[in-house]
Structure formats: C-alpha cells, structure tokens
Image (cartoon, rainbow, N blue to C red; front, top):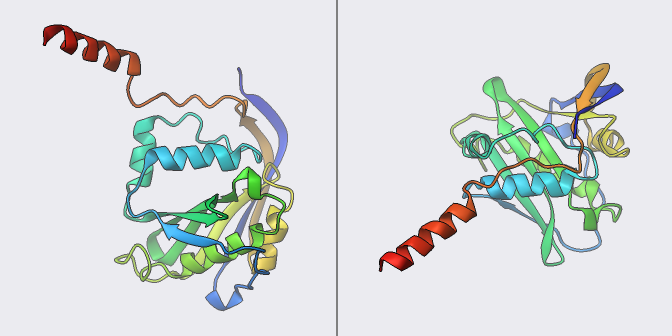
Length: 209
C-alpha cells in the first residue's frame, strides 16, 4: 500500500534543562518496575515499536532493515528500558546519550493493555529520571546530562504533549508541514533469514546422514 500524505502535521521539540524541573506523576494502581536491557536486541525493540506504536502512528521505522535495527540498538550510547506491571510488559522507552550533555528520549509509550489506566504519567516520569542519570546508571563513559529532550507530534496520542508538560517539559520549537505516512497496518520487516531455506538445509543434512 502506498504512503499517504497527511497535509498538516505539527511537530514539537520539548526539553527540560534542569533535573529539578521534573515533576512527579501520581503512582499507578499497581507496582511498575523498570529494567535496563543489558543485552541489546533488535527483535525486542522492533516488536515493542510495533506494539506500542500501533495506536499512535509510529511508522517512521517501517522501512528499517533488520541490519539497521541491530546497528541502532547495539550502540553504547543508546539504552532501552522495559517497564513491567501485573506480570507482563507494560511499556518501554529508548534514551540516547548525545554530545554536549544532550539526552534524547527517542521513544516512550505503553503497550495497548495499559493505555488509559493512569500509567502514562508515571512512565514518562521514570523515563525522564533515568535520562538525567546518564553517565551514572547507563552510558557510563558519556558524562552527565545537561538537557533532556524529545519530539512529539499531532499524530501521537492526544494526551502526549499535556503529559510531557505536566512532567516539566517545555516546548522549544514547533513546526507544521505535510508528512508522508506509511499505512500503519503494514510492517514490512523481513525476517533475519529465510526459514524455508533453513528447512531445506536441514532436510538435505538428514538425507546426507
């Protein structure tokens, strides 16, 4: 299916320049835990990208090959955190240590079962806390964070920008322009190898032995 041009998409760059500006969110009804993915996995990140992003039009990474996903997640400056609640994955976030103390929140979101249940604010709070802990908790050789920033848009969840504002983020820039968006029902990610070929090799080995 062809890309569709959305005629007017507003994108905001939001930032926080002091860790003291972070405002806590109400605690969720059940405990949420946050684990750093110490073993980077392209499979996990792209699966979470599809799961979390399916409701909020995360489609920019649809063209990525498996090799590009690996190159993205296996960088030491990127950290992926998985949020757990009620015995399952409740959400995740990606944070990147950039030059000069800039620390970007690339992705942060809940899995569909946890949307609308009061978890979102707490997820953003905990994500931001960990972004400010750059150089200590993760990316230990990168130095401290001096600015935490992110991008959001009018294609994101309707409550996203308000959630970020409540946590202490401020709008640093705003642009409005058309944007080409792939059909979100299609995720053209090839498997890392062709299982049919693997099956044939197995059958050939069986015949040889």
